[in-house]
Length: 353
Image 1 (tube, helix red, strand yellow):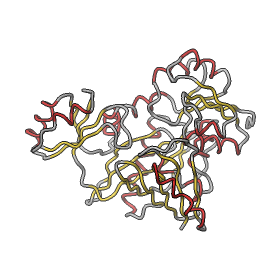
Image 2 (cartoon, one colour):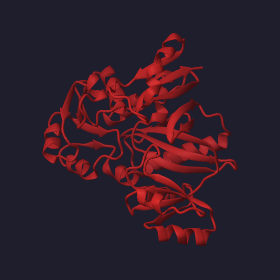
Image 3 (cartoon, one colour):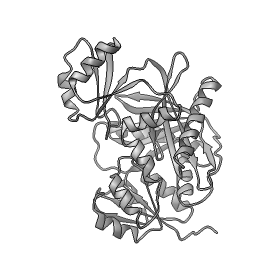
Image 4 (spheres, helix red, strand yellow):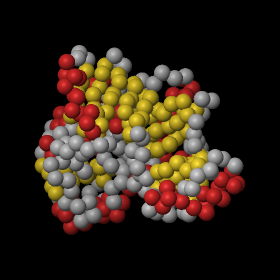
């Protein structure tokens, strides 16, 4: 029997947590947020907010006493904190997925071991490693990324064989790096899957993602591509979810080349920006599915009732959001962040077609 008095703890207080809390509230589930952020967006809708640092074990233990189960919606959560919490209470998805997704080489190795194709990559730690790569492979350019804490274009540089890239390399401020071959892709797509405690898997249609300045700008749902490409992306996401015994929501991002190759790029063990359109264009959103899965409810095969475009409102874009309020079939979502900064996600709008 469903426990409608369930208390769900969420680590973090941003927009993903806010939208998850709204989904949980529809089921009568009380959400308690644990965050180190003042005036966090999720606090606007949560049942309760507990303030504390994500590496404060004592504060985390107290948080655990207030909830029945814990989830998180940012893959760079301190892994030791998750492991510590699991001594007292279930944390979903479990730490194995975090260990994989927090380190690019570990992530690429995991995908390749499953037979899932990625761009060719190499472990590097110094300028000499890059110079040796150029000599051995005869390629003209590489993308150098930090193995940890890189997102939205942060923690990466593109280096060319005919330039002095020492300064670019040093700007990354770490020797824990990966060099990825540059992919000539025609599109970037992603797939979101949800899996519950029974092992049941459901997915949303693959979508096309367009980026500006390395930040997601627009998602087009569904992706209009050959069936074989979409099937390969979905099957790879299912393989990942089953291998790690996922309970929750998982997003997988891919490059699609002009030759039709599907190359996995990143995995995210949480609701994803490219799935925000599901709130307005599907009967069950990605946030509904995540809450259901971690709270031991069945995930439901989602139905997309409308084609959709989701546009992120980045930085000053939010100052022009009034124009979206005047149109039919247009849904504006503002996250409630006080400070507008360049590159900061302030909201999104979903336009139903």
